[in-house]
Length: 260
Image (cartoon, rainbow, N blue to C red; front, side, top):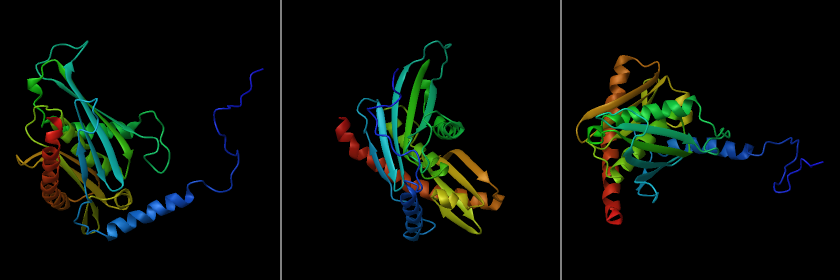
């Protein structure tokens, strides 16, 4: 009779009276408060952006904004198989959370949250890519969320990383896409909110745009926000997107010698 004991695995106790990660979760939640104390409600978190991180991909980018870390890779354009001829190419976006990206371990299977983030990022990028230059072709974008800090941060940072990766891959684009989120808490607008700030807000708004052209590519809104507050959020996000555009452009310029 074969034993059910796995000798290759170190088994923990069956029962435990103390949660293993209780202290770490408490420290991480208190760390969120310290981050906002060190910046104004109108400030965004510092951005670390590194294009060309994944050598096997046609283009890639890694973005880190304190407690938000995302790796993005772009493959293509490559010929679409088993599809009818189309004069415009296709842009596919797939988002996957690492099992350790959240406080509670996530299932490796994709869920509705993964798909909603992927759709929001795809809509933000779709009008910036010159898909008419790639007939019957597909461009695949894969994003791995290494550490998450709210769905708003995932969409905003993911859109920035994906647009940077597309530029790193040499895909024909009209302009770089940047994105910024805002949370409405009472009469205040909290720029680049953390997950805890978004959960306690009346509503949130994410603006994606091409600052170089002055074109808005996507607006994603949740919760109850008055029309006047929506306009104020758009204006605040638009100013921050212009600042982020400078960061993205500088990161691509710095990585250009490595591509050559």
